[in-house]
Structure formats: C-alpha cells, structure tokens
Image 1: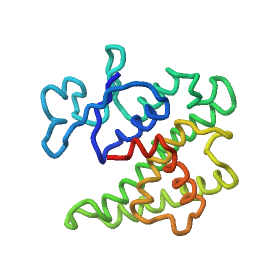
Image 2: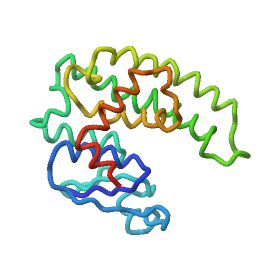
Image 3: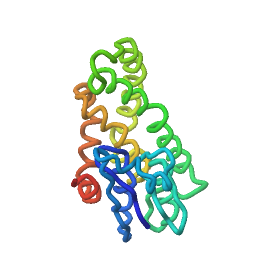
Image 4: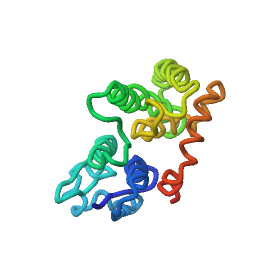
Length: 201
C-alpha cells in the first residue's frame, strides 16, 4: 500500500487513518514546489495532479475522504467506522458528508478571500457569504459535541478525522474564540498519537 502525500494538502487525513490502523504502508512524498505532482509519472496516478492518492492492491484511489472511508471499511476490526446497518453508521455518513460538503467549502472560501489570495483577487462579498454559511455550521458542531468525546457514538472514527480536517481551517483563521467546545474537541483529537505522527512533518 502506497500513499502519495505532500505537506499542506489533505494527504494528512488518510495518513492519519493509516497511522490509526497501525498497518505497514509506503509514504511517497511529493514536493509541490518542484512541481512533482505535475510530472507525467504522477499524472498517470492522478490525471489532475492532485494529492493525495492511494495505491492499494494494484488499484488507485483518489479523494482524501474516499481513501479514508475505504481504509476504515477494509479493516473493520480496527473499528474506525460503526458497523453497517446500525443507527451509528447513518450518523457516521451524515457527519462525514457534513464535514466535506457543508462545512469545509465555506471555510476554505473564507480563508481564500481573507488570507491566501492576493489582495487584488479577494472578494469581500464572497468572504461574507461564506461566513454566513459556516457560522451556523460551527454552532451545529459545537452543540453536537457538548458532553461528547467524539462526533459519533462513544468511539473515535473516520468522521472525527474528516471533521477535524475541515475544522483545521477554523483553527488556522482563529475562528473558535466563541466556540470553546470546538477548541477542546480539535485539541483532543490532535493529541492522539496517530495524529501527531501524521502531522509530524
């Protein structure tokens, strides 16, 4: 099993899951500054040149969320996902989709138009619109995790990994002053040994 990975990408997420699983894997680092993701060799792995990608049993899987879900289901004995057919499994799907579809796009749009884009390209109206989308979503997560250790049931799962990834935008932007529960939740997750290994470099 080989994970194509680079810092400052969503590659940390499947790397975290692999570390939680405790299985052997090869970490193939790509230097984006050198354009290694645009090389013909890598574009045969991922035609769009995006990172991460996973090679597993002769097949390639892309999209960080899909890779994480695949890994959790491939190793059910590691219990990184609730059992299929249970109510918790439905909630698991809900929070995975919430992280990837509802929360992260608005946070990343806000980050782009307040910090990362050149000032001439920033559009305050888009930043404000994104803020109006993510603030209610953050309140929803804050309410959900009140009195909980993890987002689904009483167990750590891939939903926590993906939600933590989305929430990392909020940490970066200093958005959690009014969300002490989110601060505590993200700090708790990042203290996990597997998370520390995944984010070590």
